[in-house]
Amino acid sequence: MKNEKFLKSQKILRLATIGSSGVPHIVPVWYRYTSGKFYIGTNTSTRKARNIKKNPKVSFCVDTGIRSPDIVGVMGTGRAKLILEKKLVGSLAKKILLRYFKSLKNKSAQQLFDQTDCIIQITPGKVTEWKY
Image 1 (cartoon, helix red, strand yellow):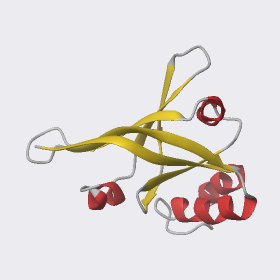
Image 2: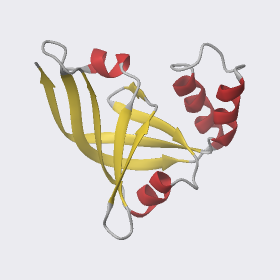
Image 3: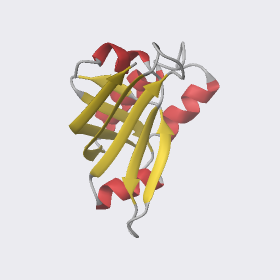
C-alpha cells in the first residue's frame, strides 16, 4: 500500500463485519498496521469477533481531514481471521495498546489487555486510497 506511513500514523479504523442476518455491523477500533496487515485486539464475545467467525469478509476505512489538502483515506475489503493462540494474542495486544498508552501500567490499558482474548487479523484485498 502506498499510504503505509498514513496508516501507521492514524489511530482509528472503522471495521465493518456482516451479521448472521446479513446486516453490516460497523465499529471504530484501535489497530496496528504492519507487514501489509491490520491487527485489532478484542474479545471473542464481541459482535465483530462472532461475525468474523461466521463470515471472514470485512470492509475497513481509515481517513482524516475535512479540508483540502488534508483529506486522506484508505478503504478496502479483505478477509479476517481470529488469532486465538494465547501467547501470540498477548504479544500483539501489547503492541497495539502501546500505540495508545505510554505504558501498560495504566489502569485502563491493563483492563483492556486483560479482556483481550483474541486478535482480528485483516488481510486486505481490494484497496482504494485518496488524497485531496
